[in-house]
Length: 395
Image 1: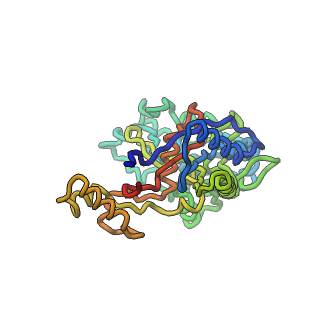
Image 2: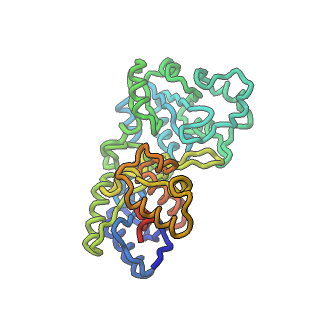
Image 3: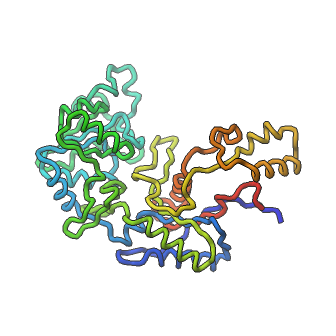
């Protein structure tokens, strides 16, 4: 029988998960109820993706900002120079509040005109024709206001992030600069907390080499429990989200143990080799707002072995228009299927793979899962993906 459906992804509704509950058992129950009620047949290489927040919640991996403040006080002396945080109420506001509560001098250095994930501080068109060099010039808040004027409000959130971040000050202890110049930053503050997500390791080394007295990044904060708090030994505060006006939820711990447990249970129940992953933000960019979604340190902190690597695919339209240009109808279908079934195990550099997406499988599946599950009130934090590893040659 002709097969008409390729990859499918569906969000699975789950109960509200609380601290201490067995998430692996919950996930397997959700899968069981879904396949039975919808008459779904599970197959080898199906994928179950579970959002990171569900795992963190089951672990109770939360931390009060008072514990963060205590950790910061143990690491910094008189100042904290916070370098390149993203402009986000959800991701950074509570971390900044914890920094301000140290009552040390806080210097915030923002990328401009946009942060690393694409959030614009202001409409960059106002720099056209100006003498500002964004690569070398460090702007004070006053200089920034003269340039930005009333164009400093984020187009999607309606928030003036410089104003917002200043509002967390304790006894007026926050100064804000706009700078893409690490040398200027070290001259202004030699106690550095790198808040940048994706270049954290490079920047940490750079500031050490530039002579900063103290250098940490967010992965070094809350790596151990303080007064019974949550913690993350690998990512610290990276991947955290606002939970309340005094606490944040951290990225989950032990994600690898979790996915392997779920995979083992599903194997015992269905005799199928089902892949499992934990996913956070997808890695895609909004074409209008220019925001790159990935504010987590990785897309997937834990995944089973079958999800390692990158796709190895032939571009069908390329070979259809070149090698098999003279063939039509069933002759073309037959030839292309045979070509796919006999493809090399590694097509890197082969023209037949031109135009295929050169990304890791977990990043692609994590992005798909993030879009399917949504980030609001859909209530589908578990995603079932079928047919992803199939191709046109599979019946």
